[in-house]
Image (cartoon, rainbow, N blue to C red):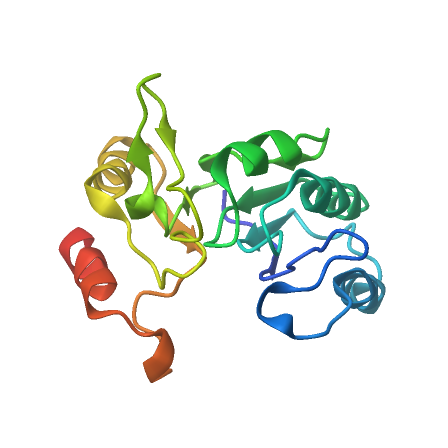
Length: 195
């Protein structure tokens, strides 16, 4: 494929349940903000896909994901979502389920393999059921990014096994943001190891 791939990226939508205070107490109306962005885009039918890179919900609750999935379903093109540190894994995965909304880890478009990486995967714990689960409390919520060995190995494996000519990584936490309060040297080192 030599054509252009048109992708719109959204991030940090932080959808809230009705009547619930936002994390950190900052007042905002995420529904209104999404509507404004959606309307500003205008005709989005020319897009190939929409990507949402994490912090879909503000508190990681089911009602917030229902609102988000309903909002993302308004797009006429496929939407793929990866989690951020505000997104609780099991609720995120089940809450995003809609016909055009996906939480796929790998999406191939033309010559591209898009990898959707959980930049908070390093906080996940092994559960007696054999599943990986979020830690108790707000541990995940307050991370600046930590891949962990499994997620880093998964990224490497996908890069080694894909038939795509190019690999593009979508992730919530940038590896080395220029903002000192958001920078985590251990997280940056994980990405340096992968690269």
